[in-house]
Length: 327
Image 1 (cartoon, helix red, strand yellow):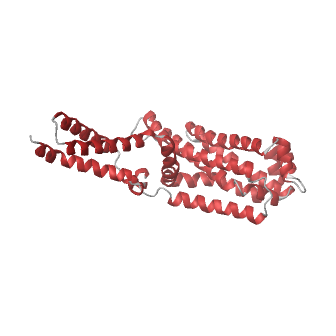
Image 2 (cartoon, rainbow, N blue to C red):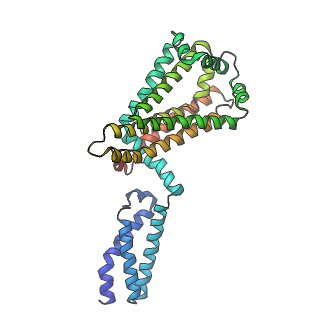
Image 3 (cartoon, one colour):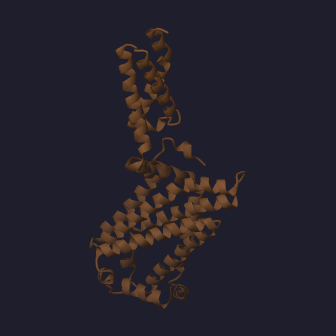
């Protein structure tokens, strides 16, 4: 085979790999890249390069193949290296795609949290004995010390924790631990996740309702409006991840339960990681923003903007390639 025949024979493979590399190198088209085909095309052209070098093909042919192989290696190395890029891709693309794909579970978990929360919030001022039974003497004392008439919430918390950073550390531990209890509770057929979500909805509703009855609700809402959107949404999504695990055990379909659980775990992992990121951000806001003395307008606007950003993120982020994760 002459050099010209050899080049003509392998030209379609060059062009194919070049197209795959160009798609993968273009940020706006990266989601179109077929990562299942690229490694095979890279191996074929790498083989062509070694053959060309062995046959002492023209320098321009060897140089062209060499440049193509180097570009392919860089693309593959970047796509398999993981690290910050993979993490950001998971949070900004895969995470919202999976939340949309699990929209039924999302709304069901939201109902488990918000229905008892709203019911206790509005009923407790009329039937305070319900909240007293749920909160107990210690819970009522904490509510009155933090959000009672004339209570200085900031001084109370700084006296309790010592500093804003200590508050942040406590809140991040508390928030993320709730998420992982929801996730791990899913292994009990979803019952554990259900109980964690239900308990938090009931307790938070009773707590807020008791403050409405015996304290100053203005201080309470000014405190929670800053971090509530991220914290509550993260908790609901952690419940979704837990229920995904539970459903794989209860309804494995045609697969073995072990196989169904492994697949569900792969699907739920980005959900629980995304939920943990959300509740970590909520802890940052609760530790460093909520204690600041801003006007009610600024604090409520901050919370409203968060709700809008969260809604827009889950509606529109990662739309390209969403079919990959469709239920």
